[in-house]
Image 1 (cartoon, one colour):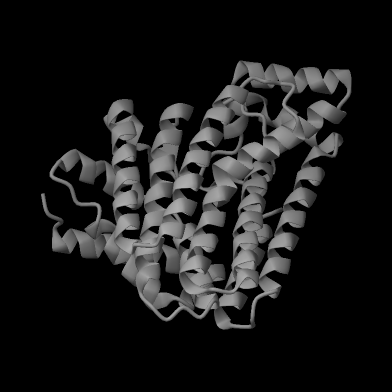
Image 2: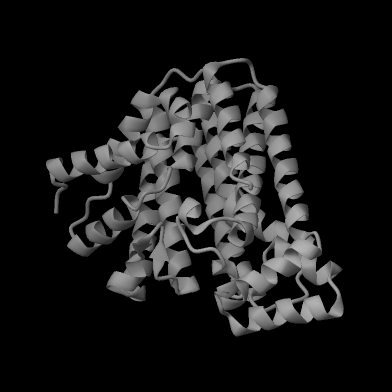
Length: 344
């Protein structure tokens, strides 16, 4: 089944409009306008399959309204390293396919029925099709990697994909584990979330540069930006607003997930406060959100996570500042500031 040209064009235009509709990021996307448009055209083109269900599920999640920060970082990092070729377009699509595959699998594992305000693929088509289309996206990403013909990029992404899968399993194994340490949690989010941001900037750097210092700086930016991004999410799930987040606050609590605010409160709260938090986690409901939020405020856990996110963002800022001045570098700094600006 070949892609419908009109459908393909509409998909690319819809995603571009959604990205441009974020006023704070207009200048960031503007630095790579043509490249970003090219990525949004390539993604649906490479999403084609002889099996209609593959295209339907893939298109559903691809068009679900995300900012496409990971492919954006590929484009910015390549531009920051003064790359003159066109392979960054394909690399950005690879990163988006990998990310989309993890979302499909995540929603099945978490039994999620909503993502970014829309029904998840597994809620519409079921778990088995969602998992299999996630596998299709992984395989399509690796086909594109082979087309790139860059062994070092293939190595980085294959290692990253393997570690991300380990992070998913580790997170699943940690559900309900109330003695989880902060160090264990930070390793989990490094593997599960930050690593793909790191892979985005690292592979773009390898594609664009032979300078070890430049490659290291771009790689570090991706890692620390990714950690800050996840910690902001952890904070916002208890302190944020559902409308701003695109998902319900308290989702982590309802799923019994131990994120950093909870881990800190269990390590520093009174016996009564710990009992309150543990009871809410075991019940697996968001009804106790206000009560748990009160505990997190009194134990200083929300403030602690906020500072942890700020620290990671500072590390990302330091990495960006180490790069040669450019419009793309400044856009990366602005993106980092936008991420941390979500903190309330």
